[in-house]
Length: 218
Image (cartoon, rainbow, N blue to C red; front, side, top):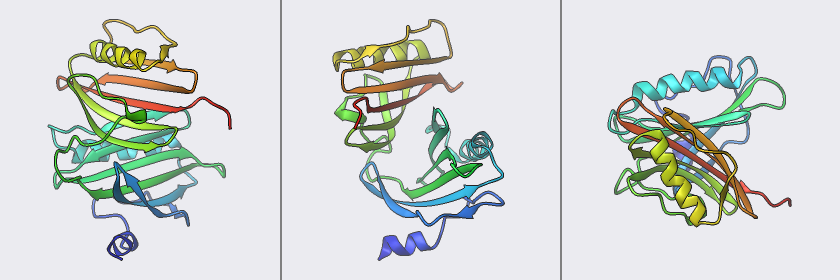
């Protein structure tokens, strides 16, 4: 009943919908890192995915503490943002193209997990490399998406993840560039495929997004 009441109250202050948005019936309570998380879905028929993403990216920048920067994962046709505000409340936005035109986005909000703020797991039970912390993950049986922060520069962090993925049976499909502030590569195994993006945040840390999905046709 408490979760239902929280959901029915709508998004919390500071996490507002875009002007012209239309609520959808597919609102629900989801599990993020195993924690009940309120989720409300909206259509923005006059907005593009990019404009919705940039709006909430600015919001994440303004609300994220300096010691826990917001994280983003960009996929074809959509993007995900996750951050923790100054009060410790975790927030997120998932943006996708709407089949009816415009954009469809989900607002997510929940209290920060108990214990360390860096809680969470990587997809498929993989362990993060040394010096890397999982901030948030949305997992399912066939894979999922994981957002992390790491120490070092983008190429070295990407290299550590490449080693972890190779040990897990993945093969890299693209070469790792050198001397870049942003590194992206795809990888594949007989059963799964994925994409990793590592980008320097300008504050001496690297933000990493890792997405793994099933490569087996159903």
